[in-house]
Length: 520
Image 1: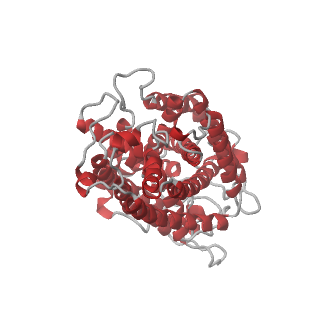
Image 2 (image 1 turned 30 degrees about the vertical axis):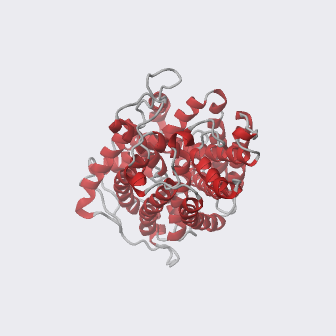
Image 3 (image 1 turned 90 degrees about the horizontal axis):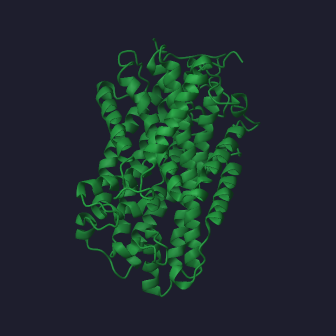
């Protein structure tokens, strides 16, 4: 298979066609979305989705329970190092193929004519389902945080505070999704502004909290505790320290996810063949630094891990909420300041959810443009503001439906959410795998490339994804019962069967991979 070369395209002498626009024409697509995003806006979207305030806050309990400070500190750097290699490999491919389809388009072009339709199909479905599940996870975590804020504002669990039912939490989730749908129906210039505001909020929020919380706390952990204490005490029946450390990695890897958004926004980014890769790498790199600072700052306020994890504390077992609340209560006699700090995190999570809807709506737009989804003709339509409006509301609706599983079982819901990370990383790894195997000699590099190191970096990235996919499927408690079973591999297996069955029964007869729309 001969991949398109990077040559200049001149269209009617229009100088407004930048390199990303020209490259899109080479790849067989006309410009339908408004190309109005700068490299800063592209970065801001991915940075907002990674959102260390969202990921670390949501899974701080996991880090504390499985290894504590040691697993969070050193696990963060371990996961960060390999995540950056995945990001570098993705950035190299993004530079060559700057389209909204992103990962599934890359797989199609890198797998060769024989495997192109199947490679595109499997990558696309894993990507979009992972994105939908990601939106569900983020917005539901915000709904749960709002529940905790209300609980603490009304006296806390030990003071007769209001405990919202699962139906109220689901209603919060639906309201948040509705707001995100409305915001994403606005022109991309508005989303660009909000994305940059989100990036500023996340950075400033981290610096405020990492300094304020340990400063306010009347009791602080020692530096030795923060960097060397290993929490081996848990009620999950796990005694192996190495195993605990591996489970503690989940917090870090869950956080460092979603940076494919920069690829999905390339058709709306100026100079996308250069700025798309910059968005991916800078989002991951800055998140690594900012996230480490957040972990250190908050952990200095940790003095009693068992009490923070106890469901009988004022925050109902939500560790970071309890840290914030008790820090201010111990010094000032009330926890109002801690509740305000939780509000800072809530706004960051709201921005994160907003950005995930932006990302997955663009993926749905591109995937349907190539005919891969039921009712594809509808999902790739754009409105007068050049927004894929139906794809936006499709993403919102599916994310709400996914959250309905929480009414039956939180265990089932958590398993469904866990596949968001695995699905996304599998989708990340597939085009990288094809690039280092089937397209090893035919891959035509874009302006950003890794040179002779592309192959070795790609292989390390693929191996890391295999490792974390296994890691996310490991048992998290012993003995294994219906209540403690990690249903992630079960959910992933069912999803894989559905996607493959859809392909075998129907998709293989009509889906041919990415198709040009220049004739339209």
